[in-house]
Length: 312
Image (cartoon, rainbow, N blue to C red; front, side):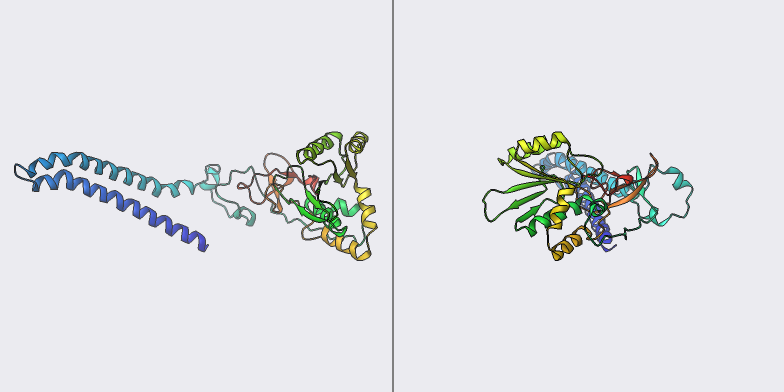
């Protein structure tokens, strides 16, 4: 609220300065057109009167423009305070719910935040298994993979959100100067196909790398597995990932489980800006879905609620 007050004060000062400059220009114009010629008498100085007229008219024009801008700026808040998409609500005011009061007045989104509260998952597993991979969202899956490689002695660097260029994790070994890239695909009920493998091979070629790792919580198709073997791609499905985790010490497995269940592990993360998404309801279709909390500033894609945890 304090930030809004300061913004309003700055706006008022700007309006006052604009009006002041406009009236000053008007005053200068009147002086040059009316007052100065009245005092400039005589054969010598009298010739200055007509010479000052162009400058006087120019000052009047500038003043008129500045005052016009002042009028437009002053009227602007009155226009934006009304939501044109809700004329009925303005004509028939009713008490708003808590969720509706949180919505921006000018939001053009076709959805709004759901008034229902998402119940957090409380069925956390104490041991590793397929249920853990199914329960977590895509960002927790990437963080899990990064932690697993860090335990193996790699120096890791992840791309948490935004354009990653097909690389989710960069691995650097102290035994080699050549880095290794990892692509993570948190899919459920859908096998990674040869199309995704070809795309990853293109990423490897763009970085001039001859090998890479593709990790998924799901499985690989037969064609994708054959393509990976022929092109230096280490394909690691969900079962293989769980086998690697099982080879860690109990302490390391507990640490990996803590990484997987960290925070709101079930709530999807926006792939565009990296913030947690919120549950939304839409008037265009039935049901609810996940949308970025920073909308409309962030226009990341929405996720159907039925697909959470999200598959990225």
